[in-house]
Length: 559
Image 1 (spheres, rainbow, N blue to C red):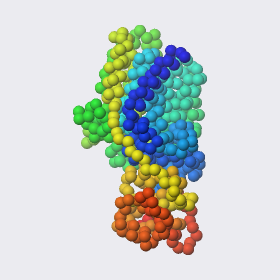
Image 2 (image 1 turned 180 degrees about the horizontal axis):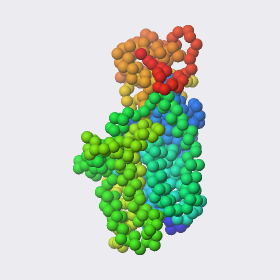
Image 3 (image 1 turned 30 degrees about the vertical axis):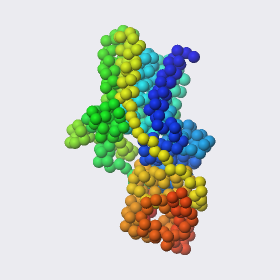
Image 4 (image 1 turned 135 degrees about the vertical axis):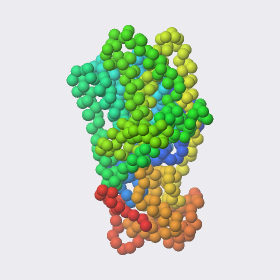
């Protein structure tokens, strides 16, 4: 084993130990509980199960079995195909999608740290700096707010891709381009946000580092990027076609509401521990606090300019100091993007349009909902700078032990706590015909619908309920109609075929009374009752799924 391999292994062991301590409450219940809440984590668990059930990118795969009878629902949220090679074999082997999700939850911080370690090691030439840079990326305060957004935790592809590019500049080795391709594809498949924001960073990287290189080098990098991105093209087209069919787009005001402000740099996650009660914790998605230790290390990296004169490549854009300067500038660019279409101090009156406004003018730019998530890329850039600062500190002080207080400070500032929640078990005794359409009661308004959605995916039926990035046009009116005891709102579903209803605890007694008089009771037990509402009318049965609309027309409505 080479010295670099031993260094990377040792760093990964530390990252893993910190991760296990951070998620210590999850470990005893890793097969039955989720960390944080049962909203987005359970939605993503259902997506992982769906990916393992249906061949991705086929027509059936696009029809996630929620918000029945609408089709194309897969395109309403993230696809999570980036972790398919890891999670699908777990689900195929164990049948446990919760375990698969939690494996991703637990392996992501060490992988993020390891890949950032490789990048910072290549940029700084320092194992100490690489360890600190990996630590700063894996356990940045940013993660406390997004621990329930697994698509923003599986971000190891970004540093891996950049590592490959830096090695290629130094050596010209084709194996380095292979590392770039693997990381680039992983980043593209991790999240729609990375597809946009990391692509911007990659363009900036090429403009900075390849401006003085040969056209052959530029062609090699560009060709690798384009060929690697080809598998993503049908995915992007599928999203674009289906979201356009429903006329889905984020309004300008909605995007502004999810943007950061200048003051957000002081915002910590509501799950954070160290600065609780000192710094504001009400910014949620826009919590951009980088940590005081990281800020101090970045200051040291800037001070290292004096050592640039001793660097034989000081005039080269790929010199160590020039690399650090690039990542600092790139972090500023990502911060400006995180501020959204209009720059504000604390979410009030705007000063001017920001660079994100330009992004919204591009095709598809209006579908990106949360500008503040650009900070996930900015966090990587700051981690490279922090690693450079740590490398400078150890050289100046000539002491390795300075790493210990730095480690404690970074981990302390990134530390967060959250409860674990038990996932409702899947009833194996619930027998429904293949493709059955089910109304799971009570019909909630928000994230509580993630539970019936998950149970539907795991049990193989379609459900009227749904929790996703977008909501079905008929879902709100249906919920309002049932609350107002207008039970004829279910007739539109019953004209398509039999409708099944699962009644759990705390359901409106009037609705239960109506079901008792109108429906056939099929099963009772485990705190729930299963009814069948027979099909209405003599017309031929319709397809289980309504066709995609055209230009946002309403293809189905419950009244």
